[in-house]
Image (tube, rainbow, N blue to C red; front, top):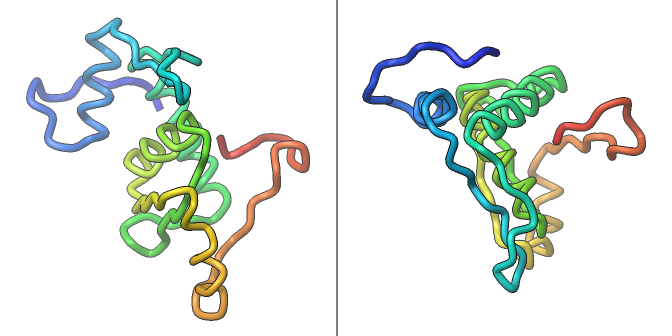
Length: 128
């Protein structure tokens, strides 16, 4: 998806990210626990990465508009941010949980259908 012309007053989060990507050269820093910048994204690059991830989520079979949700937890804040924006761009609901809450998910396995995606090394491409 290419950046497109949108109203000056964005109405949705994807429109806001798209607008910032077309107007701003400001960067968003991904910080480590000590506050050092690990990686920086400009808004355009963040939009492109999130759009690619959204396309991969949809190609993997996730459906928008509440039919599927993304329930996730990452220690890696970069992946968390990209997946949040991918959910916004793909209109797939995103629910982050605290990383140390992973034990709770195991009790949900009997009542929740979930999909495991191949790891980066197991696939030709990755979702992130």
